[in-house]
Image (tube, rainbow, N blue to C red; front, side, top):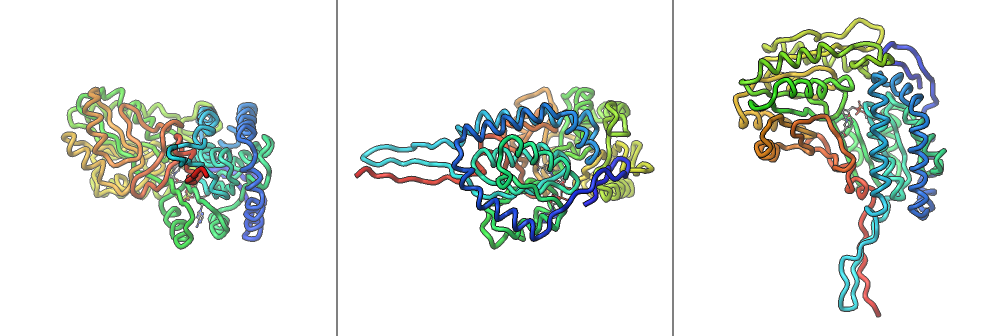
Length: 454
Ligand code: NAD
């Protein structure tokens, strides 16, 4: 498989990819090796993840450069992703043992009731490219810590990073059969689904998620799908328009807008709308577009070339239906895949840009008259990953966010993930969760023990 730099089209590597036969062999080896790994004391598994963490720190510069070259992520943001991985690893290291500790839930009359948390067995992880360290390790690390073997299919757009994660885990002491990397695109993912697996943990688009759910439908395999979103934020009349605009411009455009929890729709109260738009455009004007390897770059490459057309189509559809375009709107001349920050106002829900995931540096800003209209519009979506509100009034924020259908809600912040909180979606944003204590337990199943003393 050839790997190209999306920022300039250059060939950066050629790697051997898997096929149905090698996928089957890796799955069989993982199945055979898993019981021994589950029998390894937790302390040893924790020590392996500690060593993995140390290697990430040691190799951070090279790993960030690889991520930038293959995904087109600005180098400063690639480093942020790797640095942001460390507290996630620390959370797993601190919580794993307690999360799966045996529980005594009843004792009396000669009867004991206990729960143990046993590994699922062999889990498959089919992963996305936009935050490959985050979305990969959200699954791989707790799955390994809880005694599973992992068949990991990184995105074909983040293969080198996927191979690096795998190598570092092997060097840290995780047996090769227990942690396996499968290289290739959708067909390798499909071959993985055909194997005997005990859980499928997917991060990616809604379209692929649905296909995977169909493929596994008759199989009774535990399924988690972390999919896309169309995440809304509402700026209330009492919010500071400058503070909100600066925060939301970053939330919409960071990672070149290619985040699952990017701000994708903004509703602004009419009292502050014009001020907000002015500050938003001023902030966006400071975002440097260009070579992701340049430390000053804020907007890097669009990783997958077909997305350029999606973005252009959304902009054209919006403008044709009456939106105002404030700069940008079409791809930049090559080489590489580049799209400038693009802001649309006078938008409404007839437009694709307010309904379907953009996954790029494109944002629609819609004027609203008040809270009820904002909540109705925020909930007018088939997705539900995150949603937020900017206001000085905490009680109003809490009341409003309680009415919004989303897995994660934000007050005066956005585009934020915490290892301590569960990460999940509502509706077409997916099923299941990662992170938080529940995101460790999800790689196990509770086994119920009824024990009567003789
Ligand atoms: P994608 O759906 O194109 O690909 C995801 C993975 O599925 C890749 O590894 C791909 O090779 C594999 N795949 C493709 N076809 C397959 C098939 N038929 N069978 C099995 N596997 C197959 O998504 P992407 O472009 O890599 O990622 C972007 C999407 O991911 C966006 O929608 C984004 O919002 C979403 N995402 C969600 C989260 C979250 O936590 N909810 C996090 C990151 C990204």
